[in-house]
Length: 184
Image (cartoon, rainbow, N blue to C red; front, top):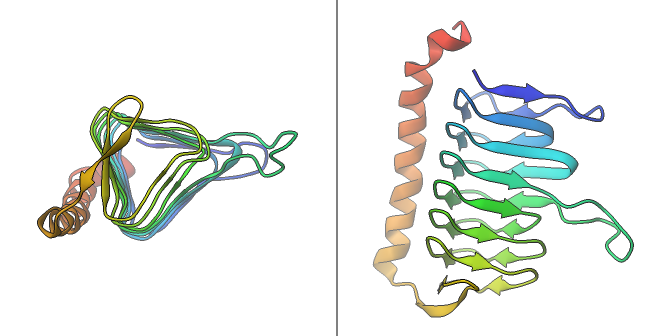
């Protein structure tokens, strides 16, 4: 079963139709939107700031989502705010950043504090977006550290939308398959 752990008086909130896989850990100030999916062995730790996950977003197996504390010079710290229809690949590390609607973070990529990935932008598999960087809409960034590689094609953007729909459907199938673990 997934673990929902209260921390500092904050209890994770999960939309009734979201899928949180067995083995996932949600801690503290975490909110998961409608039809979102948090896959096997993900950790979302909202212990020192907040995490928000928008509708139909999927966070794939083994990914870690964390935040940064408020401190001198950064009164708000860095929450992690993830919009709607976002794809986050397996084993990604997303920390104290903003992923706008329809952003894409590839397999094993790292997004660090203060970064933004705009709508319809992509960070390639294995890339590392260093603190404070921004990936503009329509662009693909790759490498360590990540740099502009090229503009995304209309076909790639359409493929991302298909990926979102696929994960919504797949999450429904996994919800049914794991129902007995939740006592439904």
